[in-house]
Image (tube, rainbow, N blue to C red; front, side, top):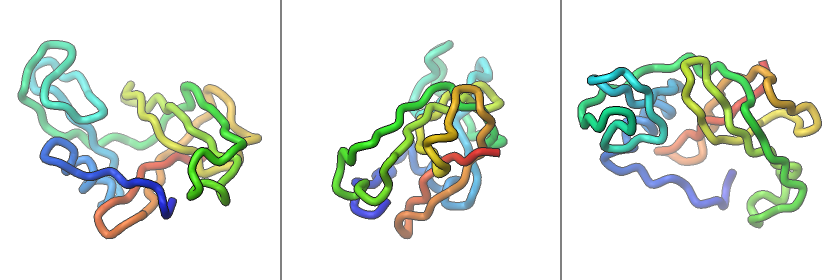
Length: 132
């Protein structure tokens, strides 16, 4: 989506963005209790531990909820209307906010989707979702 502000990786988020660039979806996993967390953050919301590693996810899930925008909220979106924002519940239980690359008219809660990665700069590939 050229023209939109892009994420700026920092120490916490860089491994996530590097995995997306490599075509993999990875999230933090607490080493104390095993809870998966997204978006990346320093501590576990379940147990407070600061120890974690990065776990590769399947990239498959179902649409948990969605919103279809039929009006461009940013000039860079004008050619992409209708634009569908989704919250996907991944197979591993993580909720991820993203966008749908498929037709808005076919979106429905519970529909299976899988991640695809859209390169938008040399450093960033955005995780987006398509119907399975």
